[in-house]
Each structure stands twice: as structure tokens, then as C-alpha cells.
Length: 169
Length: 192
Image (cartoon, rainbow over all chains, first blue to last red; front, top):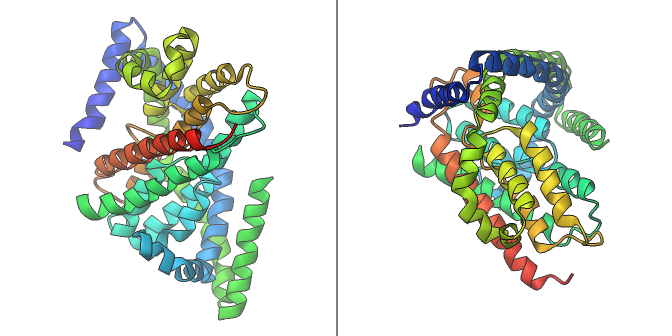
């Protein structure tokens, strides 16, 4: 089933654009060129963060953190190996991507840990960054209960990622 | 500035852990290995990133966000009652949600900010209940195709990078849904 989604999405996007008299191929090309620019900004970030993440793993710090937190993680049903990812995800998107890529490489993309990592990355956002951008632009000083509610949503995401991977895959 | 602290913290933590466990040679070898891994990852994601930014631009110009927002209107009206009387807000808000859904981060943020600014008018810097819900909805991502993650998976040799889709959809629906419910509940308890 899921094998249909991506190819059909490609066709639908192009067909709808053609119907609106848009030059779909030119749009694809100029969008891809934007993607290349995005990639150039991504390279320095990924180099620095994967350096730090690889250091964390090889030094044993990553393992120490997940061992330390494993009772709490096991209690709520989230694999303790993902502890570092769970901690960093709400703070930095690119650091989370670096940690996630490292976890997937270490444990295998199709392992339970690898898949849980992928689902976590795909279904959560950089909470603190989003809150500061929105409230900053809107000139809000008192954010009231936004942070606890948003962190609760993140927690539900981490929990459900672990659960869905265990049940569906 | 936050990232400077995080990066320094990660390096400091690694050195402390390596000194304790005697892993210093492994730590020192990790530095060039990690740097190279960063480039390898970026290069192996390049194709997917270019493809999806291209498709994203296409979906934007093809008016898919507009079609989607018609479908979502009744649901959004339940979460944000004030859009029923404010059509400008409704347009910004549904464009924000739909662009997020299609993975068009560059289009979603400006729309969301405009919606937030409109909601914040006359609030004296105190977030209203609807504004809190808007932010919670934006911190919980609901995405049709998590393209970056799929790119990482396929770069690591995965043959079925998109088989995580059902799990991602269920997970993000639960997290966004329960996040909004939590915001609604806290909105009733929290003093202004």
C-alpha cells in the first residue's frame, strides 16, 4: 500500500500544476536548485554535529546516559538507546538528525531501534525553536501553558513511535 | 547561541566519559570519522532533498494547499472558533496547517507567524488560548511524507524507506491531537 503513495504524489503534483497552466518541469528544476542551496547550508551543520555525536558515542558517554536513564525509559516503554535523541530533539533539529542518523547506522536501519528513531524524527518538531520564533514574532511575553502542552505532545510522540514500531512492524 | 552551548557540552561530556573509561584513543579517532560521516550523510541525502524541494515547489504552485484547506476547514473551525468570523485569519491558519502537512516548511512558517500575529492583536503580550493551541499544533509535526528521514534511511541502504509512513502518521496524529487536548484542558485551568 505505502508503495503507491510516493509515485502517485509525484504524478498528482505534476498533473495539478499542468492543469493550472504551470510549467511543472521548470518548477521542479528551480525547486531542486533551492534544495541544493539548502544542502550547502546543511553540510557544515552535519559535519560539526556528527563530529560531536561520534565523540559522544565512542567515548562511552552516550551509553552512560542511556544506562543512567534506562529505568525511566523502560518504565514508559521507550527504548533507552534513544535517550540522547529524545533529550535533544525538542532543542535542535539538526543535532537530532545527526544523532538519529548515527543511531540508525549503529543499530541498523531496519532494526527496532533504527525504525523507532526514524518514526520519532518524522513525527516530532523542534519545540523550543518553534515556540521562540512564533512568540517572538507575535510579541508575546507570557506564554502561559504553551511549553508544558507542547512538551507533552512531544512525549506522546516518543511514546507512540516506540509503540507503533513494536506493533506495526 | 544555544547551539554553542550544546556543542561545547557534547565535546566536554565526551572527554569526561573517555577519561573515566580510558577510551581516549577511540575518542581521538572519532573526530575525523565523525566529520567524514557528516559529509557522507549530506551527500547521500542530496538527491532526496533536491527532489522533495522540487516537488514541494510544484505542490505549492499547483494549488494543492488550497484544495487541502477546504477539506480541513470544519476541523480547524472546531479547534479555533474565531476563524469562523475572521476569514483572513482562516486563510493564514489553514495555509499554515496545509503547508506543514505537505512538508513545505518554508511556506508554513511565514503563514503561521501571520496567523499568530493576528491572534496576538489586543492581547497585551499574553498568549490567548487559541494562540497557545496554534503553537502546540506547530510544535507537533503532522507530515504526509517525512522526506528527510526517508532520505537518511535510504542513504543507509534501506530498501523500503517509506514503510515507516503508517507509524509516522499514527504517531503524529496522536501527538498533535493529545497536545491540543492538553492545551484545551490547561486553558481552562490556567489563570490569565
